[in-house]
Length: 286
Image 1 (tube, helix red, strand yellow):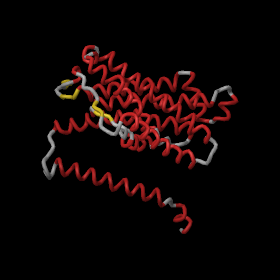
Image 2 (cartoon, rainbow, N blue to C red; image 1 turned 90 degrees about the vertical axis):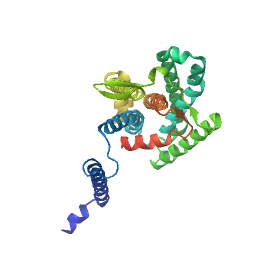
Image 3 (tube, rainbow, N blue to C red; image 1 turned 135 degrees about the horizontal axis):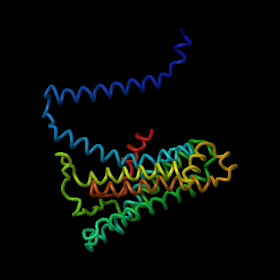
Image 4 (cartoon, rainbow, N blue to C red; image 1 turned 60 degrees about the vertical axis):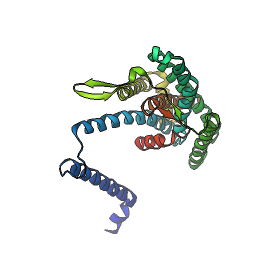
């Protein structure tokens, strides 16, 4: 009997109890709101709006979470600076591309070309910041105890936050609105904001593209091989350092694209914008 109690993982038990309590609270609150009429009851349109809003924001978090998952799968480290890769590309693309294109009127006249230019810039900047961080901060510590890269990642996050604060200031930077994305789509009688629809569609396209990249390309197979066993992958002729750098770049590209979509939805960016989405995406990844 005593041995059975010793085998119980009390931390897991506590976590499962905590999850159960949260689920019960959410279910009870929902039932009370819908059926018991407590408070101001939500209408069907309200619930549809909640669903679409959650779907669009969840799509953004999914794109960011992929970076955490890719890096952890290859290096078994949590890259807490990933949210700042998301921020760096978005801030730079907004200041140097989006706002000038909007001021000149090009963004409204050629919205597709303009948005592609903004997104490409954000992705390239995010990739550059990610690859530089991997090369300078993470690669020298690859064989260090696991706590060391974790602390380094937190330090890198602070560094990039205040580096870009020094570049762009601490004020909110407005993200330009696209005239073509004003208003709503009517889908089977359901009205959906155009920005949210674009976010969901763009996210799905990028997620599918990433799946084919990882599963069907030679580089993707190399990433999976390195994630499985670095030493064996090196013996098979795979450049491990290059593959890890590509992994960082891939995750950062998704984060940069997510940052532009974030700007479309929330219409403002700032140097601290990567922290909260980064934490939420990390939670989703875990």
